[in-house]
Length: 441
Ligand code: ASP
Ligand code: MG
Image 1 (cartoon, protein in one colour):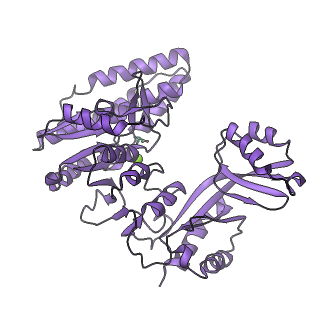
Image 2: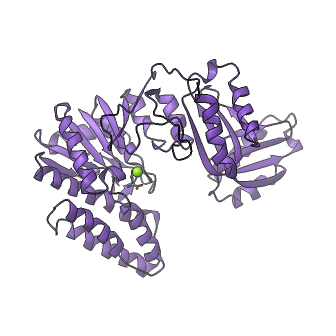
Image 3: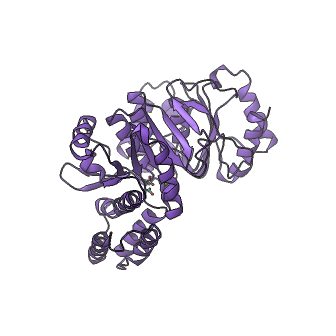
């Protein structure tokens, strides 16, 4: 069995969905299972409508129009999705009446994107020579916890998937399953978080013991750097789970950070491919990742980070000081990435959007606290990083030559990443300069 996930741009319209059909036909012998995102822009439109509704303005039209365009383009029966349209209208009206959109109602609202797209795709496939059927992931065992907005499947989901799959999916149909959405055991709709369909796909791959999980997107696999900043960025043939996880976490734009966990657990290769150039071999991600001829594998970055610094003489010779600091941060739910400490200060980065007021107040008991924002973490990833003498010199020389100020540095203990902190404003010049220094022969 082969799990194939198609992202929003891969199923954006009839043109793209026709490409998906060709790709699936070419893989018919491998018993494909499709996991799909909503058509590009539909999830955003739904959530925007939710926000407007919470201010009293209920308007389903932008969503319905977007969805109708694809429906029509694909030649589906014009009333195929009418019951969904009505439900969206009702929901928006409900939100506008109470003027409040909880995480739970936003998940319910966002879920319509995938629920509608899989029905369009299955219908189009069936009329064009491939018998397909749409499934809501929860009907195939994707039951989650109640963490609306970032739900995770409940322990033991794999067994449930196998049972439900056997029971519901005929051997002669290609199942097209919703990414992103699930249901709690109480029957409420949840989502795994924005861009989470990759994660749904690897969960199904793990649950169904697939031979491979393909992630179809709009780049030729994972690139050496963000191609919108670096013209000479190129696709990476192979990398390890560990490298791909670091890249995803540090802002690599291709994979969602949680994507690889289910694949790692079952050791299932994940292949990233381009729907617009299916002949390109893309990037294959495996346990050992094969040989890489380059010094490093890729450069990622994450903008809009904040840095919290505590200066305190209490730190001097005080076992347990950091434990107290992290205890406070844990309680305040601040998600820390990079840390650096000296005798009298500790600096930590976290996403810039975090609400830090509570944490800062609570940490003032330890010393002077200040917060700066608009910083970026840049991360050089590669399993060869640990073997490279002089890599640091190369990186920091390139930064000096580009006139970039470095504020924090850390090399992960697993020695496959070297990260540092710079100003958001310096990203545009930093990434190309580093790519030149590390990838030019
Ligand atoms: N449709 C969802 C989103 O836009 C999930 C996904 O695309 O993976 O975030
Ligand atoms: Mg996406």
